[in-house]
Amino acid sequence: MARVHQILTSLGYGDAIGNAVLGIRRVLLAAGFESETIVETVDPRLEHLTVDYRDMVDEVGPDDLLIHHFSLGSRASRTAFAMPGRMILAYHNITPPQYFLGERDELVRQCYHGRRELRAYRSRVDLALGDSEFNRRELEALGFSPTAVLPVVVDFSHLDLPPDPRIAEAFDDDLVNIVFVGRLIPNKRPDNLIRYFHAYRAAFNPRARLILAGSHTHFGNYLAELHAFIARLGAADVHILGQVTNEELTALYDVADVFLCASEHEGFCVPIVEAFYKRVPVVALASTAVPVTMDGGGLLFDTNDPIEVAGLIDAVVTDEALEARVLQAQDEAVERLRARNFDELLLRCVNQVLTTPARPPVPVADDFWRQFQLAQELEQIRETRPSAFQALPASSTAVTSAARVGTGA
Image (cartoon, rainbow, N blue to C red; front, top):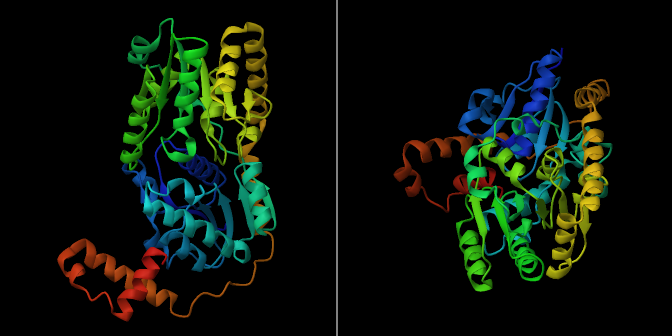
């Protein structure tokens, strides 16, 4: 039986891509495929499930199939391109780099290079998959063919854990709890969440609080800007919790009265369907993949007027009939999502590629693997002899070329 491996830049713990990778791994192993999860970096809690991409360069053969999870340009991504064998591209979308200008220059470069490199895969992959219809359409617009949708792995088991009682102690009272779950990064527009919440308190209900739960790692400056904005606005009862555990997360959904989303760029937005599952009314900006993800549930808005958005929040909080209709539509959307047979869809895609004649090998630079080896040697020097690495001549042709392999320059 052919080997079917997954390769990706970074395997995170508890995020949407990480859950998708683990779900695919489970299905492949259950179907009898030999399968490795090949990564550049990994959360230590998942390291035992992975292998470093550098160790697989000589292991992947022409009869193998790589499922390449593409989200950012990286060394692992470029190495995967040059490896033999068939390839399925699993596209999780890339945030437009302009959102990070002035916040994280490194991420601006990564997003820019990722979007540029994505186009090169049109001639490399045998099948391009989006994890939402929005992402599939983006692939199609870029010229990928054939394309299909492999939906996000639906697993709500982390929300069935006993809720952390400290959340209820802190927030389960007579105040209206407006909650958002997601990373505190610019494209999620937490600043607009604060604006809308402030308008709701001023115009409709002063007894309310806003709870923002999500990682702000590597965005310390942006977090400081948000705190300064809250102070300038005079917005009271804004609680920024940072990353939370699964027990804290399910407790937050338990105390939430409304889930509010102002994100301007989403490839899917898993927290929306989590809120559906926990029966929290969702009010969200109709942007990018969000309308498709909501699938008729929740309330969508297409304005940035804080008073208008505040009015929607007030309507779903105070109108019991409206809330009941919203929740019913959300329940139906969850049932449609869960009715999809993820295992069957995945195996159908795998078998489709394995039974189709392989594409001709894509040419890569003649010296690619030589430069790869040089980059490996430089990385070993950097890790074991950092002072010697710093002393290397920056103008050396070999060093400069190898550095390009390592950084995507």
